[in-house]
Image (cartoon, rainbow, N blue to C red; front, side, top):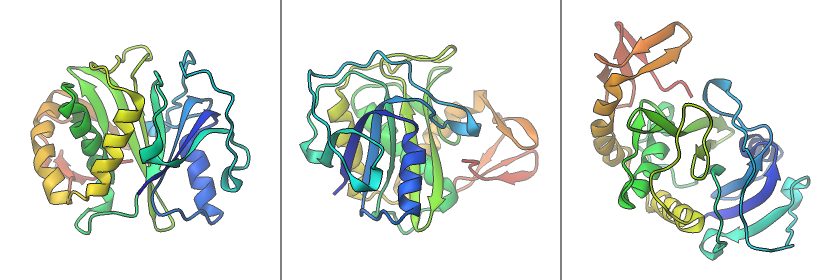
Length: 245
């Protein structure tokens, strides 16, 4: 079962979680979210900060934890107990001890992005995953996910525009409570979908990616004629490319 921590303000959920793991933090499955990030990390090393304006119930509660000594938490407990009525963008980093045995590590971003996509789709969103890890509705981005290998853990950082969005992006197309979204997401991760199952879903989304481009160290590439392999990599311009983040 996931342990879930929610902070009001944090530098970066990804940075905080990675730093704690390096110092010996070893909770089985854990997620840390924040209502505001001041130095968030996005894909391609972009900064992903929040703009404020979050809404939470009146509360002066503050929870401390020795593993995150510089963070004041609003909530820190099993995720099933989280019921705060919050309206806010999602900024969260997490890892799970329930990693499928057939998951190609280089495609972990696709795997976890698709799990969130399934949650959103079940609530009538028209979101799809543009290869390899961006959340799109039509031709506009609403979020993304990055993955880092830290010791024996796959640390994922996920952001979704729910209440506001930066220029050239849009917000999620459905209304869903913060707590219900997170609970459904953690439930699906805990269920233990195999990579094979998730990849079958993803193959349909990949066809929607063909109208887009992506950046690599070698430049900008079109996905129009890309070939998708079963490990999540693609063949573009006669080169095999794996998820870059």
